[in-house]
Length: 384
Length: 234
Image (tube, rainbow over all chains, first blue to last red; front, side):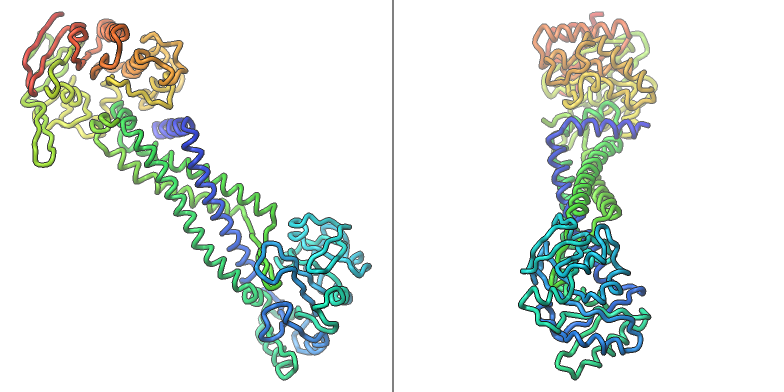
């Protein structure tokens, strides 16, 4: 009971020092916001690049090419790929991007043949608005991934332009994969005609579905062997490995951002410790007075630790809440070379960041707390 | 020396305090023998460095005895641990400081309630006692005021309320009127006299002011860490 009363006393005293508390909470909030953003990017990279034993999709790309503008493969390869045992489908796809470089708002057009649409898109897309039939009924029609639609504020019936391509939105689609959530699906002939950079009869890549996930590597090798002597040799990888290679720069940045996450926690430590130490500097006599009343050293230390944890909890809850809201509603994704890595906020990550910040706050408050509580009462009473 | 025929409430025997400052030893109290009867109002006087504040700190258990014995009531506080002393202070001692030492972010009521947080009293009882203590010092109408909103005299009266709220048998005051004007000082001294008279609280007050010391029934004059003179007026 005494510990609870002391904790409440500490919180009451902290609440009466609003400016100091607000500044500390603000600093901690910013640090935890960065930590959550880093965690969200990390989760997005993991989701986009880590394969699992259920993956059945291969991407066939032009060998030694790393950009959608330079990967050109004859559309007719589709028939040859379908002849390889274990291949369920091979969908030629033209990729046109608004920006080849890393950017927070890349529009990736994915041109797909009308005859492939039902087979290729229906299993992996869920219509939020519009329909596949409507999409196929109009040449400039587009299906917009949900994340891209929210980011750009697009609704069915809207027209929008990017990379010199103007489309009419005829459907908003939700999908499990980040690439589909951030794509703008259009019909292949329309895309080939809409931009001079694309030649008819050529596509950027093939999306190949295989029957057995365990045979992904074997089939990839068979595809590349089939076209090795051709004018347009190919390089085939599992989709997530392809994304990892295409977005190599982003993956590197995400790895580096991991250090920023640790730096954010270090900032929380420094902010809490700084706030506590500065506060204690001016409260040496107050602590001595509490002890002269009968507050034991560890009870005084407890009140200081509670203060540190409270600051960390308030700051981290604010930072994590803000990060979750901004990232969840902003639907941010970083695109590069036609692939997208989303920021994937989660309540679990926000809670983890909050708890980590509170643990750091506890550690940051403990040392000055026990140091202050062990000081001589007489010396403390003499302090100004 | 025993100043009364009653058994001593506070008993010092060979009480010595030695500080070290680098290689130098400072002895503010040396072999002090002193008895204070229960319910006495005692003033400690003497020039700066005579050991009166050191003696008060030892009586409060906030400084450690180097040699000798110091008993307050039935307890030899010279042998108690830091935690035992803290627990003892929470029920047995109230301390009043020259500069009031109220917690600035707590209002008068909350400051007075502080010592009661260490006990097992329910919230309503704590409130009742804190308000009663404020009423005793005549500040019921200032319960919600923060220290910055009070005059010096009012702050010291809140500090007195805080010191007596747990009803300790021993009240220690270190220059309680040192920062106050005459009128406020008289009010504080009258209050201490009233507490001594009506509650039987033993009061030990350090002061430089002869007028303040005159309120005490026993005046101990210290010099160079030893008892120089005792004046008993009551």
